[in-house]
Length: 98
Image (cartoon, rainbow, N blue to C red; front, top):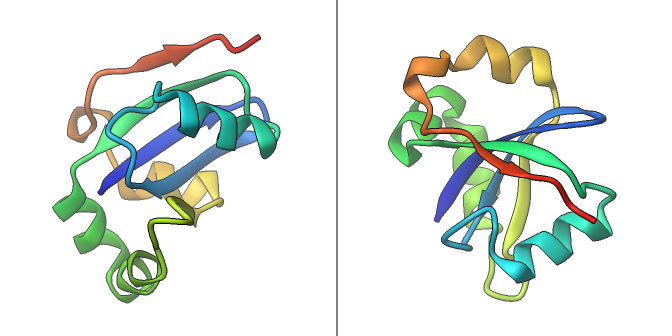
């Protein structure tokens, strides 16, 4: 399981996914289906996300199944930016889309 902070045209969001990379073709298709074609992604350490989101993290994580491998953990960009410092995140991964 991976936790990602995505900076998108419509604002930041935090997602949980079973995909190993934000550039995985299947994940890119799922994001595109949600209107997300261009983004900057930062991986959030799983234990850090779990600590900061607490019970909400567990609720979303337990609802993640093989057939539904992308869950939005947080769509409030202001909250996500408040919970995590940039020095706590992985390196930026850029995706231009098509």
